Each structure stands twice: as structure tokens, then as C-alpha cells.
Length: 52
Image 1: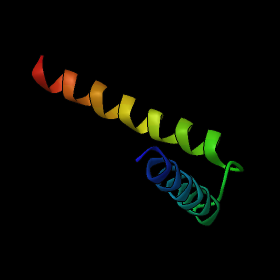
Image 2: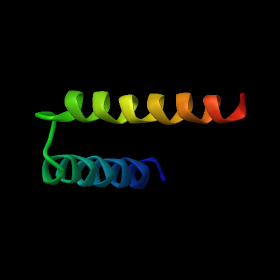
Image 3: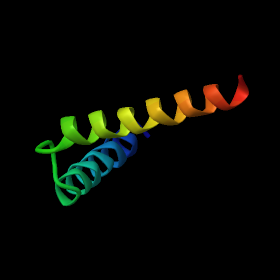
């Protein structure tokens, strides 16, 4: 049973690496995260102003 779990985890790891490479890899990850966090902050702040 442990061997099957190991094989499944290796396959999942390979699929995750392939998906990461297809989406652009680590090149723009920091920029994308910063952009998304900025958008979230603006949305939260605008919702806070509507409540007041």
C-alpha cells in the first residue's frame, strides 16, 4: 500500500511541475502575486468605504 501511495505522489509532483512550467514558471510569480494582492487590497478598501 505504501508503494502505491509513493507512486501516486510522484505522479502528482510531476503533474504539478508540468503545470507550473506551462503557466510561466517562477519568472513572473512575484509580480503576479504583488498585482493580485494590490487588487485585493483595493477591493477590500472600497467595500469598507461603502459600509461607512
